[in-house]
Image: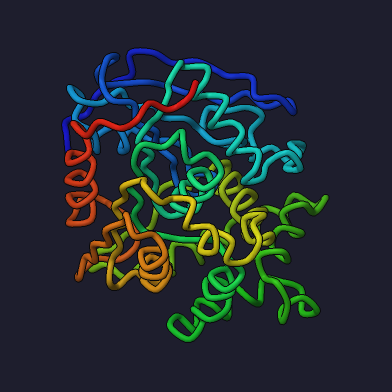
Length: 323
């Protein structure tokens, strides 16, 4: 990974519906444009993402998706409505930001939830995307949500029993993400806080496959865990507001866009089959499997593979996009 850098420009973009989205640019103002799509939903764009890019080659754009990071209003606030916070709103925000910054095309980099959003954005606006680099690949379809919230109980039975039993008995056999979303909307703050704590505890469990894994320090912050829990359950309860398997069905729209898909073999949180299926449907994509790593790119082989893919595209010229 490249050394840490700071933004040279930042701002707040009014995207409508009462939302203002924080954005920043770093690297070379005359470099190749690149966009970062952070995970979560709700994680925000951390300084980690800047280090994936050669600062001499890229003009890197990061933004905090609706409701998280430095964007407003904050989804951690019980009074903040999530009604105007869907995948389709985020896609519109990305296009508005691209036009605001005067960019024709950009390389799009995303991980985990950011991979789902990257696919959805590129399929909706293929002329705006020069290349795609996605890791810890997800589609956020119903089957994946069911795997994360129910089937993973076979691997972590004790932890999953606690996760399930936080939900009222009448809802334990249904959509657990939706049940948690309802608890997070409860008028009783103790109910909300318990739901956020147990949701984030489960999130920390199902990514814990790498040796030496330590609990995510963000979850120690009650505001941060409330923000993440509200946004993740909102999106997962609705399978990312996408038709099931729509991203796979529409992968033909990515034809002509070079891509790199990078995924850990032992990523049991997001099994490899999603990345493999997308690579089969998108001939311009190259799938790299990292044998000894799980979910995320915390500085190991996955991060190196992401950096290598981004470096490879740094000097590639592409047909002009649109502004």
